[in-house]
Length: 195
Figure 1 (cartoon, rainbow, N blue to C red):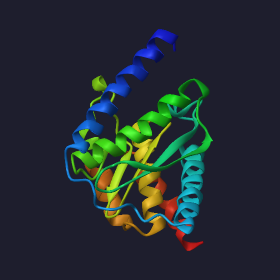
Figure 2 (tube, one colour):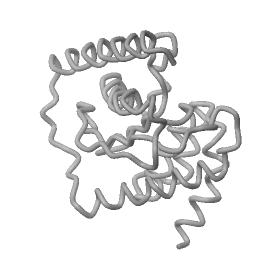
Figure 3 (cartoon, rainbow, N blue to C red):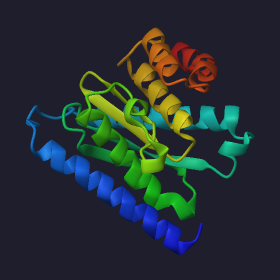
């Protein structure tokens, strides 16, 4: 990717993020926080690592997954979408490191702003608004680093492993997004749940 294109991408993403941040600033957002504890942070990180490994093992040979070995996962406030924690899982593509970090935040902000369950409900690739965030009571998780449906499948898996949603509810979200990856990862999730 050429430098002018990357600068354009970052500039556009900054505009999109500023737009949503300004909109959120004009709405009531003082609802509290996700209530993250050290235990829940460690759990999200552990499950994020497990889901990324499972996804890479399952889909790493597909063309759209090649040369992708990591992502950023963002934990955001349910009401405002404001990031509370962002962490790296694996090794995101070096030339896309900053973009993945920013997109992980934008997805959560947008999902909260529109009060959607998944960022696919407001996705528009022409405007660089991708899927990959899932909003369940008390928490938004978003991911950026893989194909958008892969990002969504990873955070759906983390939500299920945390007990935030059931597998059936996660499958319903995946169907709504036409997500081909989550249904394949269900076997891995069930295996992780059995321990």
